[in-house]
Image 1 (cartoon, rainbow, N blue to C red):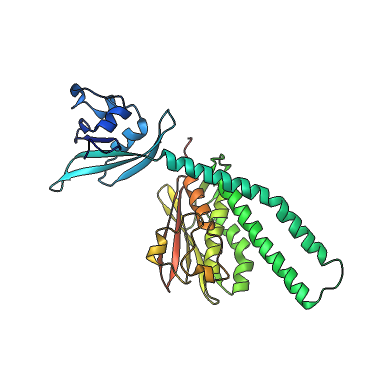
Image 2 (cartoon, rainbow, N blue to C red):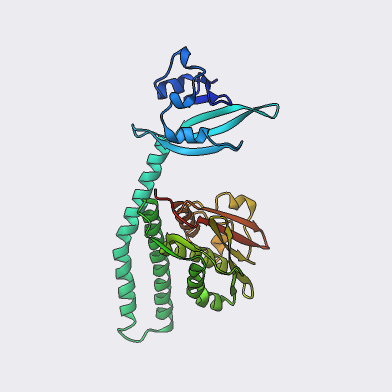
Length: 333
């Protein structure tokens, strides 16, 4: 089976010495003769990213995308090998995902191009729609039609803006780092979302009592956008009279922002795909509040750009709590 699989496979012992590899691995790394068995893996493989995966101390599975000099992209996964609950080494499997990366890049380029090209005609539609109201009195039906055109055009415009924002973030545009107190972004988000909360009759409150809070180094505009998207979603899916709380707590050299609501909740099945582009929670399509499924994808991309993580805890009919955890300082890389 190992000889037949096209995926390169390495196995090392507890001393990081190579004890097994298959023909696909031999070809990928230009190995090998029998004398190389038993040698340290670091002397046989020069790829630092793969070696870093091997160096992990815990028994968890670790994965990372690795790009080689020929342009091929592999998903490298390292897992511990245990015999009778005793660690016996590690196995690394490399899966070629070059085609999928190229397809994803082409899709992103297409979406970005189309979104950019839609901006001009949308601006014209919005402009002429507003001008129609200046040309004379409209009857009730005409006003209704015109308002509907304006509303739907605004929705498309918002979608285009989100697509372009997501494209810029994923394109790797450098972060505009600035240092401000960790609670500063919470105050700005509450101010921005207060009108929407009041209209929905949702109580929007901060929940942190720590004093002498430190500062966070981040792209403050992106951080505000990420937290606002979480709060915006929470307000949309919370019934009037409900509550949305924004909290923060320090975790060593990291800070964890949280947004908790008393809304409709999210099923375990939907939680698995919640942060994917264009994913919408089951039944959300029937709600006026439903968006295009880009808000959380943007939050995830912003978190990853800051070396942070995003996760959710939710229960149907009870509510949801989103956690955005970021380092207080960004690495020089």
